Length: 399
Image (cartoon, rainbow, N blue to C red; front, side, top):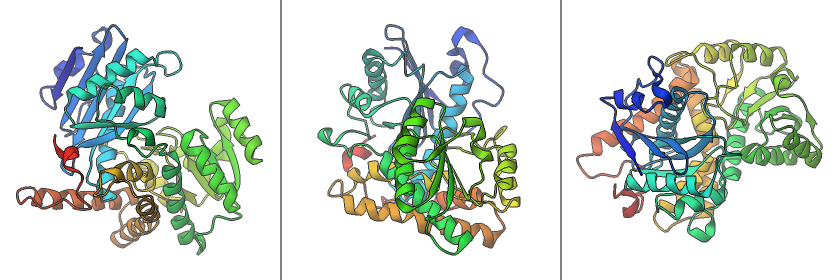
């Protein structure tokens, strides 16, 4: 299968891989990631991208997302941005994993075949462990098993294959720990009982969060672009459901984005503020819309509106923590995972404390936390000292 393994420079070959030779948008490949891979297999219809952002802390790890991207450039922009988020996520969570991400360009409802998945698995295998594939939007745990038939470098697997199974409950649990931390800062108590929560997206993570919120006594309003899924969830949990375009206009205390990134723009912040929202916490990656790198208009709008934001790569690290636990000495330990998920709450407090102390945005404080760990890893790189956290198994580092 033809695989183009492309270092950051030169990059013209990435642009050449664009369907029909269409040029990429200016700046689409700006960044300092380690490696970008274009994988194609005409027989199965595979066209995919794998971005290895950093292997400083360990092998790059990150989910595989399957979406019908409108352009090749949009896929490049998404995979590189998400891979960087994974680097920050693992570093801030004190895990010995690097940041990576993969996207398969296609409609998961019509294009997701066994042949395509196995072709992608061979692409992952060709990298020899520099990148480990996790589960993300558009794929299922069964799909990860299909990848595993072609490569051992799959981080999200069912228990029968040596993995920890479905990581959505861990992701949801971590987000709720972050949400409680924000609630404590705003209302003086971490309890979510009685709070009005507007929840966007009731897929794998969102449905788990919904169940936890209802069990805790929150009053939840939900939405999803899949209207049948939204109605089923509403009936199961006896909660209100609204159209997707109305979710941020609902009067609420907490806004919980559990769908795809870019869900909150300046107009959404204005609607949230008008509706009384004081906390924003969810599982969506890169949830704040941005016109490009360095665009912090949405986050500044949140601060100006007095909305306490649980930075996405801090709040949604639960699934990564659960997946990475099996690479620690002794293998997977559920009690340890529970403790590390609970630590997302204090970590959220630490980020927000630092932001207040330094007059910084929450994302700046969170990024500084991650960069401090990466800097420590660089200084230890020549001495053989572990980068932090527990050492991963030798085979996970053999990259």
